[in-house]
Picture 1 (cartoon, rainbow, N blue to C red):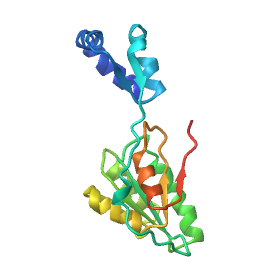
Picture 2 (cartoon, rainbow, N blue to C red):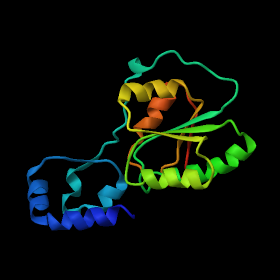
Picture 3 (cartoon, helix red, strand yellow):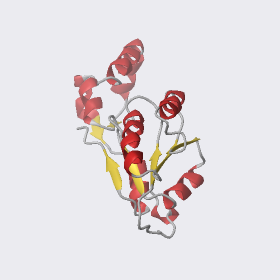
Amino acid sequence: DGYIRPFLARLNALEPLHYLILWRVKRVLIANSDTYRVLPKVFRPKYELMLETAFNTNLVGEIAYRKESQNLLFVGTIMPGKGLVYLIEAMSAIVAEKPLTNLHVIGAGSDLEKMKEKARRMSLNSNVIFYGTLPHSEVLLRYKNVDIFVFPSIVETSGNVTLEAMAWGLPVIGFDSG
């Protein structure tokens, strides 16, 4: 809901153009039921739910299984709603029990500096490694070198990164956020 209201505010500014486009198109592809609820009811017969989940499994190399899980991976935009803040907080408890556990964070976004500062304040500098934005080919290689993929997103339309992680044979830990 925190993202939908700002979206609607921007949409209202473009309302005449928005309605003109909706009148002229045959189909409107939407990613989730939240979008369905906020778009004008008069056009609902044109709406079609289409989940954008696909992954080319030909990009997956040989899977290496490790005996001890010590490396976690987060891939995504670093912004509110993606849940990285909760994952960093959880890392404190994880590291207390398994000091060699590392969280590898790939991505950039509005909260990147806040998350780096949070990790530093929690004395997790050596356990939480930020890579920034990487080319997709490098991201795919990172899947091969970790033990668990973590997906703490609170608001998500598809989460293709979970498909990539599973294609590499990684267990995926996610939030049950509805």
